[in-house]
Image (cartoon, rainbow, N blue to C red; front, side, top):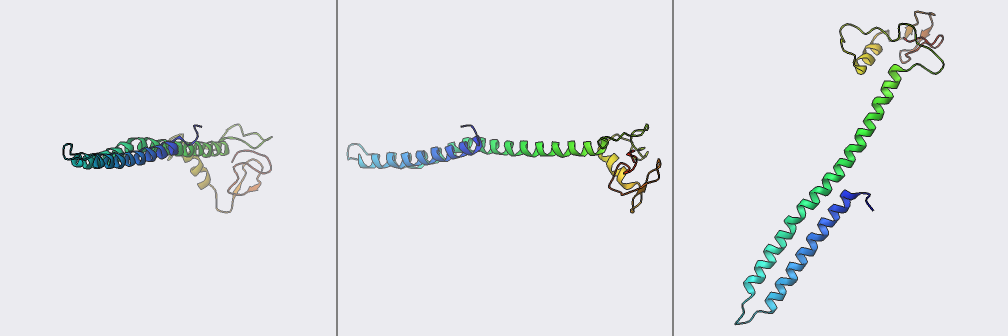
Length: 159
């Protein structure tokens, strides 16, 4: 019942607008039909037709805007959730050792002094930029590893 509330509010605003315009037209026709020499209603019919339709149209803007805001907030919530998952995955890649392997006593690689902050993204870019394009050699067991791996394939020590 409350799924896609933004879309339902927008549809409701359109419906109310159309009903208001139709009622204005019917009311104007009824006033024109009741016109007589003693009770002139032609002008009242035109006023009802113009201002009734216009006020119905303008009045629907508020409901439509609330529906649009509800749809946009739902889309933003989904995007924020996806971004949080990506950041969590990045953090897990940076700071967790492979299963069954332990980090060295030093922990993580030394952060170059040019970085200065503890930003995880800075640490990732500094770690990736260190080492040659052909890979890196483990200082503990001298095994050759690819540039993409953060842990030694033989001893499991952190790069």
